[in-house]
Amino acid sequence: MMERAEMEIFLTLAHELHFGRTAARLHVSPALVTQIVQKIERRLGVALFARTSRRVALTEVGQMLRDELQPLYEAIGLALSRAESAGRGMTGTLTVGFMGSQSGRWVYAARDLFARRHPDCVVRIVETHLHHHVAQLRAGAADLLLITLPIDEPDLTVGAVVTRGTRYLGVAANHRLAARESASFDDLAGETFVAVTDSVPDYWIDYHFPRQTPSGQPIGRHNDPCATYAETLGLVALGQAIVPGDAQLPLLYQRPDIRFIAVPDMPPIEQGIVWRTRDDADPRIRAFAEVVMEIAPALSPPGVVFPAPATTPDPVPLCP
Image (cartoon, rainbow, N blue to C red; front, top):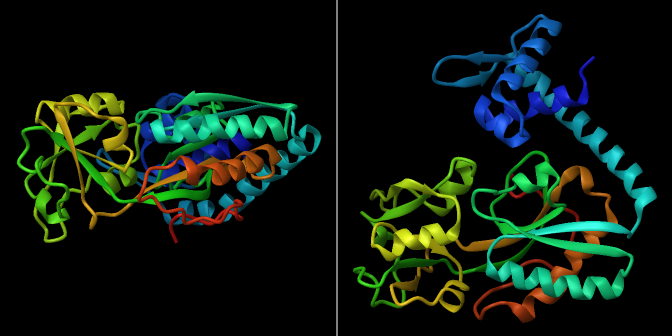
């Protein structure tokens, strides 16, 4: 018999294939992850992971266990969430995190409207920085996030894409592209993107800081990782790196030492609503998400599109 905590550690490691990242996601020590995995393997009498000094991989049995255990783990979480929500209703405290100034405008405006509709439920707001990524959800420090996508995590639901807009780049005022209103993706050949802390998953970093242009020309990354957007702008102002963002940049980060230019042929920037999958049945989360979708159009910069309907649909996976 496998305990729920053991299931969580096994499934997280099966996704991350890295003991350190697994420990960071679950807020435990790498030693505990190793001990739990070894305990499960001894109990089953078979290796679930093939480990070397360079990589961790699932064995054939490990793959089979992951595929069969994942839906059972999700079902247990959903059942517990439904039971909890049935007795909770639209009361208590809902903690909402936001990443970026634009998302902050949505959250505070949504809180006011939500409070009028659901006066017995208190909404608490916290800020999410780059280095947090989705850690606040997993730690219980937030119940819902308005965050820059993509998010592709087995235990999290992307409820809706709130906005989708043209990608912008922040460059130093004396940068070779600074006098232009727009540039192409291929114009970034030879440039250096900022780097972010390793608490942010690789798939997110690679999407926002691609290593090459469409024609295959390399794009570098700075050596010093940044934990917040303010830190990235510091490197940009010095001319040491460039940083991507969305249409809010030229409106909200006006500085004499930085210019913002559009790059229309890069993948768009999307902001989305994310919560723990085990909380799918929490009516407060759905209700707050619907309010965000309702108020976002009036509070967003020009040129931003709203791909989702006015009410939050059943969640669909971000990636196939």
